[in-house]
Length: 326
Image 1 (cartoon, rainbow, N blue to C red):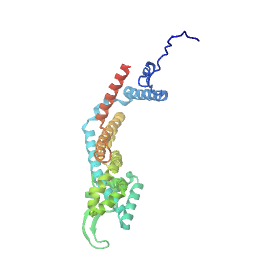
Image 2: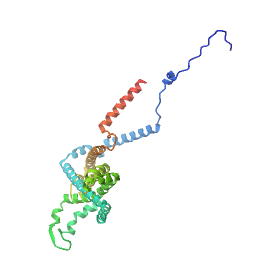
Image 3: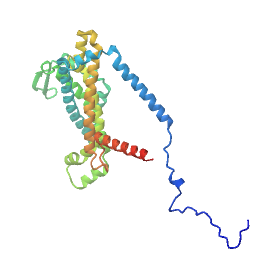
């Protein structure tokens, strides 16, 4: 196409790199659609809603009787016994587990063999068998004595006077707990880097000081979560002491259920809720203990539940503002 002489042809300016076009600036990145996630979430919410609805509206649960029994003195007395048995057994079991773990890690073949045999035996025998055996221990040994083997006894005592129901329960649970705690402690000690042992030995520190001040504090990061699982199992395992005539939480509910057969389900729900409360408290304590021993091992401490809630609310407000501004 010919142009007249002297005419000026004006071409449109190409958009510069520094100033993108309006069409490009109007675009924004859209998140990837995930319909499967939304469908799964909807299904889970429907199932949870149905479960809660059935739990609340089903008259078979008798929630009015549950509220009657929940704080009854009989139940609270059983709860106190459960706490006492669990506390004594946890302390004694942990002490026994530490001693067994040290014996297993020692260079003495006798100590290693005895420790391994103990752990093997008590991890193989059911707890209920141990409790019943200890409950009938006086039938096998009327008296217990301490002295020289095949020689004179320094002193002896009547086993039946010492073997109270509480003592049988605590001893049985402690013996069983020590076998599992020994493996937890041994695994935690072995998780400490070998360079820590070598550095402590190079400084000329005594073996006991090395273990107390260097090895064991680092091993606790691995021991705490595993032993808390054992502790939760111990709390639930205290329900077996009912079979050695000790009326703990479960035993008290069973006794009341025999007297009031129509309240068996509410009484079982009372026991369930109390065990949920106890294990929840232990889980909260576990979180803060793990957070304490995480200092120095992580760049930032894990956030507490309150901090997580504040962060979630802040992110939600920021997202709402961004959506409103578009």
